[in-house]
Length: 427
Image (cartoon, rainbow, N blue to C red; front, side, top):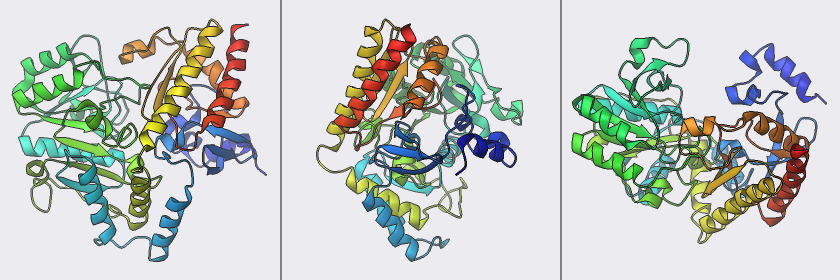
């Protein structure tokens, strides 16, 4: 049996940083990442045989719990017929139809293989349809690692893009405007200055990549209004929130209709699937109908589509989201109560099957506010919980996820462990 430390050392000799996605390296919390061998329901087991209650959930897709038997069987059945064809299939038509049925803002859908592909395609489509170059994004919102979106925000209300990754030439992000999340005044200032040149606004309607940050009252509607006035495309990046926070994502909860929506994670049920969809008049600009090119050999992969269809059918059961929301709120409220009882500055928030934990007195509303959290306290909490068998995201800037298999006994076990950890942290 290999230990996690041995595997990490081995991985570092063949993979940059020893991981294939940076947050997995534990750099922000220190220590050795756990190498997961298997998962079932609300649990994961590492290569050393240690079991953990899992609140990462593959960063969102495991809404039914890990390895749901119906999803696994759908994958097995599809795989027996072949892994990839590079040709249309009935299943990909069915998935597109389900997405359009569930989300009224979608009139046409293009399947891709990841959230990054979906957001990259949505922005290209918005630029192609409008003939404009500039895009607006928000500080702390992550939309994948395509060049024009890897931008930091600077000081002030409006910041012209500066690359936040080596290998991205400044001219690649010269048309990216980065604003403060939940700041409509900044949005209006951007459109006052650049409105005729702005192709789109892209936003996580509930942010999950700077921890969980909800939109302020009127923020999403304000984005809708300003985009409509100026002829810009409003893109909701629901890669994380789509079918995670409710049966129609954030757009269903808020009543705000975007022009384009990007999806991934839950719609693949743990397999790599993404999608971009929206108004038919916009989508018709995509090749082969229009001049906006997009292609992918594995787009609509039959095995991945089978997993997504099985997942979407299961989460459509009556009462599914009500129960999921109750359990997530139970976890968030329970953690907050126990931390504050121990005298530790701590806040928590939840929506649907997502939650956020913040070592500060109040729930943050922006990247600047979440950055004021006590990251040292988070590191201490993270490792103490991990050592006792609870697996949270290894970063103070990531949302957490609850599945349908996190029942009362699992939540109670988590809260009992947390109560002990908070008590030790106060000493």
